Image (cartoon, rainbow, N blue to C red; front, side, top):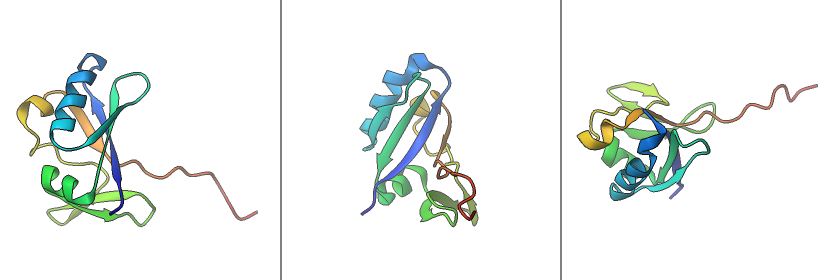
Length: 105
């Protein structure tokens, strides 16, 4: 099954280690992003579905999006995260693919 990765934006860089440990305890692989105020979480679609209560689909423009309550978004809902984890997190979202500009010259 394909690996899914999302960016976790933290409220401050001094909680990065705590956030890494918290998301690892939920089953995610974790990586600190340069600068320390964001981390990456990776896992399969089932893990994201279980933790966030969403269906993870392929986005039409590439990458992934969450489907919850009939609404599609790259941003994941935080309401199902354990309170200590949620308190550290400003936002979690799937990244849009990089656009390299026009390809038809």
